[in-house]
Each structure stands twice: as structure tokens, then as C-alpha cells.
Amino acid sequence: MNKTKISTLLLVLGLLSGLGCGPDAKRDNPLDPVNGRGVWGTVRNSKASPVPGAVVTAGPVNINTVCDAQGGYQLELPGGERYILAVRHPQYYDAADTIDVPSDGKLEYDFIITGKPSLSNPRVNTYVIAHENGQLDRGLVLECLGTHPEGQASLDAYLFYAMVEGKTYPADSSKPDVSVKKYAWDLNLELIYGTIYDPESLAAWIIGKTVTFSIEPGEGLAPRQATVPLFSPVPTSLVPNNGAALALPGNLSWTNAQASGVDITIEIWQGTQKYWSLTTANVSNVQCTATLAAGVYLWLVRATDGDGNSAAVEATFTIP
Image 1 (cartoon, rainbow, N blue to C red):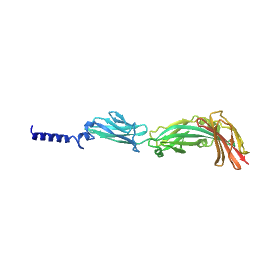
Image 2 (image 1 turned 90 degrees about the vertical axis):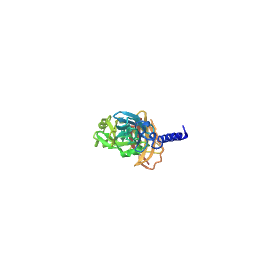
Image 3 (image 1 turned 180 degrees about the horizontal axis):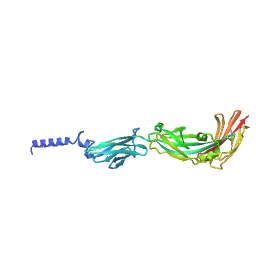
Image 4 (image 1 turned 60 degrees about the vertical axis):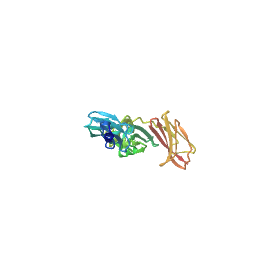
């Protein structure tokens, strides 16, 4: 073969080689059959964070896959067909769309899905306060946790409610954390029932009733429930009482209604000002070492059991 023919052959081979590379080459085309046929993409939330563990399903063929740690997925699907592509994750609202997979390669399709709030740790505790005049106040302290996969700030778009005896109450307060908020309610029995003519019977009536916690708007969100526990017996026989004089440092004593397993908190108040407090366990007297000006003070003993139910009693004393 002479040099002219060799040069021509090399030129042709070079041209053929050039057709197989560069930006227009089939191998670099996202619809390249070499890379298979189907759909691929990323699932992210509304904060642009990946959603690992999301399940992406193509229907009606029912082919699915699970997103990796970066939220990425890919499905091998016959080309030239239309599919319903759906994504599901237990902490997010479902999303779906219709896609047309090309006959000569893969389609890129990214999802942005919205997180949904959830309720957990529903809790109901009872409280009793016995005043020095013999009046008893009873009520419920309710708590639950609100969680959102996109952060606790996202919970601000929702309202949290508790339903007791057919009446619904918005949460009194919330305490934020990184991804959760603790919601709380303080419901006196008079708030729930109105005028109470037989306190003892009513207190017995509400025991065992169901409290339902819910979120609004809450389409597709499961409520949570808890039951009302027993009311604890209050401590008795506080000394001093009825405004009796107390010399400081002085002894404060009482009789516990529960033999053991309770935390005891002692507080001294004058009006809305708390001057002294002490928390201990399973004792029936303490030494008050507070420095108090002359006047009349209210003191209370609160017993709280291991479940969080509390019972308190109040009395007054005078510093001469």
C-alpha cells in the first residue's frame, strides 16, 4: 500500500473517531441508550435537604427503589412509555407526577416534597391544690411533643389542640428544641365543666376519660390519645397554719398522704413573689432558713409521684 492510500485511511479513521467523542457524542448524551433507559433524579425537601429513604415508584409497572443518603434514585424503565412517578416517605406528604420516558435514554426528574408534622409522647397528669379555707382545686396538665422533619420552626404554621370531654383547647404554651416543641395545657376542671356542684363526684367521673391531641391543619395526620389518671391524695396537718407565728429559722411540718415514691417541694410565697423553695423526697418536715421580713406568708407542700401527678396543700404563717 503506498503512502497516499495510508494517509487517506488514517484520515478516515480519525474522522470516525472524532464522531464518537465531544459534547454531541452519544455516550455523553443524558438520553444515551448506553446508560440504560428510565428515570433518575434527587428527592429533596422544601429546605433543599436530601431525603434519604424515600421510596420512588413508577406505575403502573410497580417498579420502585429507595433513595440513597444523598436523596438520589434511578429506575430502569422501558423507553417510549408514560409512567406515574410517585414518592413516599413516612415523614413527608406524598408527591406524584406523570412522566414520559424517551425511547432512546434516561429522563432526569427531581422531586421536592413537603415535610409533615407529627405528635408523640401524649401525656396527661392530674393536680390537686387544697387551700387553707378547705377549697380544693383540681385540674389536668397535658403535654405532647410536636416534631417536623424540616425543623421545629416549621411547626409555627400549625396549631396544636387537646380535646377533653368533647371540648377542644389550643395549647397554652410551647417550648422549642432543635426539631421538636413541647406543647402544654393547664386545664382546671371548672374550665372543662363550668360550675361544679359536686367536686368529688366530678373528679371521679373524669378519671379514665380519653384526651385526644391533634394538629391543624392536619389532613392525613394521626391524632394521639392518653387517659386521665387518678388524682393523688394531698398532704395534711401543716404546721404552722392559720397565720400562726413562726420564728426563724423555724420548722415546717406536715403529714404525707403517700408513704413513699414522691418528690416533696416546699415553697413560701407572699402575694406573687416566691421567697423560698426546697425540693426533697419522702420527708415530713424541713428547717426554713430563709430571711423573711415581718408579715403574713403562704407556704405550700407539693407531693409529685413518679408519673408526674401532683397534690399540694397550702397554709399561712406570720413573721412577727
